[in-house]
Length: 291
Image (cartoon, rainbow, N blue to C red):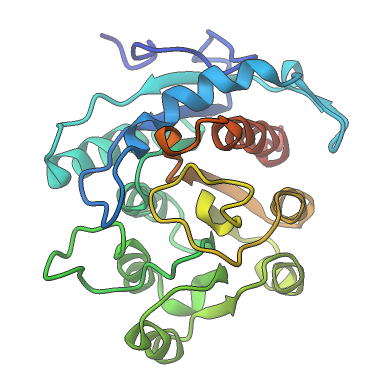
């Protein structure tokens, strides 16, 4: 198949079928090979697409409509089942082609390890890259029970790649003592528990810079998003997360890529988690598009 053809699957609401004209490429990374508790996030992207149909294409928050943004839904990348290293290479290759075409990659996971190959490729294109990370977990381990490829390790790899001073973490409320020490040693901008207020305070520091945004759905309290593999009580509200996305959108910086990960629909029979995720994706498409 040609690269500008979509993979099999449903299409997110309002997506264009014109690859050339589109400035944003939405894509799925259906991988959960390394999760430490509950698998199932590989089904997240497809269910988010299906759930998008419940929403309007118009965002009252931003007073913009999806019809004003040309974005292409490439479907889910067909990853090598059960093979983390090969899957990561497949993701990096795909994202490289998106970036080479001058488009913004917007990914849906899948476990959080999928962010690692994406940031590697984004960093190759934007060496002054900063990363904004919203999550319940720090994901700063060097390994998980001896395995370096784990959804508990991607932000450690990213901090080593881009420099800890270029990593901004918010909402963290679960980590090891060693991870706490590493944030200090690496100079990471680390903000536990809260998101919106510390984010607003940090955004001026990122003025004019290229930024990658990665959001783990479990930054939210499980009351708002129970459909995730590693739920962590004590999280933020849906309203605060939406406000954080809008704050990033309104800031004087350039979002060059983003993802939303760890949606595991099987654990939420109410379907409010994928429905919420679809709304977040809509707001990211509208807010991160600068055309």
